[in-house]
Length: 401
Image (cartoon, rainbow, N blue to C red; front, side):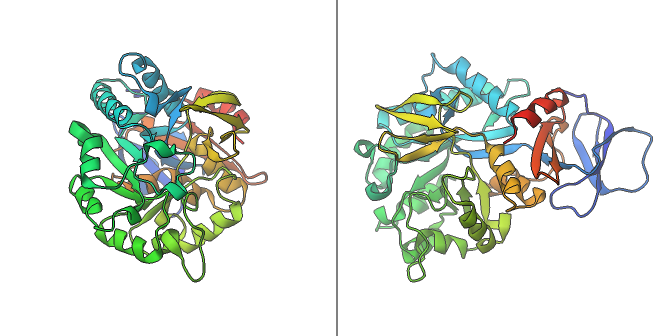
């Protein structure tokens, strides 16, 4: 652990959720002891951030791969070193932790990857910082509506039953953090209560659910929506559908992608206004295996995807995801004039933590997890740096889009 920022006060900081400038006190162990409004300064070492925002690092709840590795292709022996590199790469991209997402694939693939990641997470406990931590696995399928499967291969879709859930999860149910499913596939209403008993967050997506069906799913325990607007019916004034119901249901969090391709910025404004800004939303990258690699043509299951400008499409032009990191979405929201810095930052840091019920405050966090955000008000160019990695700030200013 890097203790370069132990026993000091970070002053003149703006902190999401706090009014005015704050002083962040860091103890001798490099942990945040308390956050207080600026008052009299102590005789401790001081870091003046001159009104910049301070937050925790990001949490990405939907990321399909990076550095050329799709998580569905993960092999225990062959890819262990690459997975470690991905964790470090994501740390460099500002991500504190993430949930590897498995798109629809064979039962054998899913079971192999669950077992491999279970072992890897155990090994991470002894891995020294800095590196992004894996929180569990997000199964985006195979329990999807065939008519809204998007880029998911139809041949691996399965009926939504408890027996099929048991078949896929096997002995590794504990690693499953999130499961995306189409609730209309289970008219018997058995699977959502079953998953909740396993402490798995149920997210609705790739679905044709009506508002009534979605309301019932939320009553049964579903609490999330996967990539809002995408792979679901659009909002309609007579049938608001899954998304419409989610936006009026307290406690439901909707993930969304702010790359400018998956959702028009105007509709993001509608989404934010309807959900009281970050209260019901969180950002995801939905990044694919070429994250961290240049544009080009890459394998995608038995097909190929073409990545252009960070957007990935199948040969038939079906949108399949992005290769842009999580914080690009934060920067876009500010650049587009949709969000102030505080709201945009919260959507990638505190909101996803709240969506999976993990602590989202700064208190007791290590200083090496802190991100400093600076916004040029004239250009709306938002840049960031980890406090333990200030030497790369000029580089991040260069690559910020």
